Image (cartoon, rainbow, N blue to C red):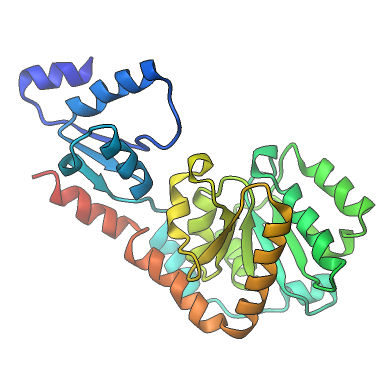
Length: 274
């Protein structure tokens, strides 16, 4: 109704939206097409949505990808003072590489898949420690799986924290961030501190921030729900992060510093408000 009113009054309107990233039925597509076509500009979180909207017939000239951002300036100030610590060595009493996840421990994140991959790789003499930072309804099930499969000594259920310096230190001292379900803001949070991200390759089931993961550069994709493929990708990237740490860290910084920050968003917004 607001869009119709503005169109009649000649008032310029801009939508800021996820756009079209998941399959919709015919009625919903029809409604959304009217909604999108009434706007003068549409700001989007990613290019995947832009391509989908163009396929639906939305004018490409009104589509502007401005990505997303977190508290970038604060995170940048923290990043500039980060150093490697023994936070994991003191906890695990070993020097094995560390995989981390930060977020809600919920079923849709499919965190049990990391544990299944950990079990598979352990049987192949590839050992890593896993740190899950957060709370959620799936925590007890994950703990039970880790305990019953002999993984608990390599798992740290860190609990919930909202201290950004604490989170930054945990990320910075890890090797990889893994999110087997949809990845969302976790990708940006990890990359800003220089840690590559692993997630699944079904983009229809992803959040728009998955685009910050550039295959072979800032992380990797595995075949959705395929534990063997996840294990393969994890092993590959554990080897990469042990030999190319500095280069990979800089790649991760670069994507956030270039696109996923408020300064870039501001620049794009102001350019299209004219």
